[in-house]
Image (cartoon, rainbow, N blue to C red; front, top):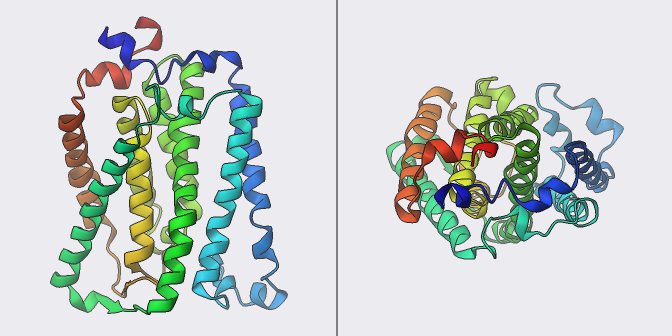
Length: 311
């Protein structure tokens, strides 16, 4: 009974309707929608901004823009791409939104809010501890009106940005790769590597080096394990939205992808490896253990590695 239950998210009957090539087509359609969402930003570029762009920091071409306007331009393509994803899901795959979210009969919103709250508390606690231990690493950049505008933009659009990534990788493509490979391990590995590698264009890579991709790939594994163990993306979605929203609201830095009117600005010289080890080998494993205890996860080997055919 347990084995039949754990397969439902990757063995949804709707997945069998179309060959894997349609998942590639669907992904391309989402990418096209994303490019369309970048058109508004093009109106604010000029030959002068292109000429003054720092080759090591492509975002420098938008340095003349207000931080809130730039944040909107960065997030808007994800909103448009999410609309494209819904069209792919409904018109190409004829698949319900619930079926690509969870194996449960309905989306468990309580799981989303638990993941959101849990990681939110972890993020706030981590920033506070670091701030009180190393106050010299931070500047207080809080301005009420710009912050409130930024808060409004973030609370509306970051769920679409984080949601698109979760639905595309941990939902849509994980189900597609399961159809292709007929097992659980390869969808986890492939979606995590692709997810992490797509962050190669982030300015953090230029600042911290290619090793930062280990963080993004590791985060992909973290969300993927969460999805397979829980038979749905609700928890991963909550974690992801919480992480990106609080990153925008709490701390910014000159070398991060989100240049926001946050409460604090990190002015320190970042060190990659201590933070990488802390997150990947302490915070993520502890989080999975907490979730396993709360939701009664068991049979880890089967849920993460078994062939779908053997169930």
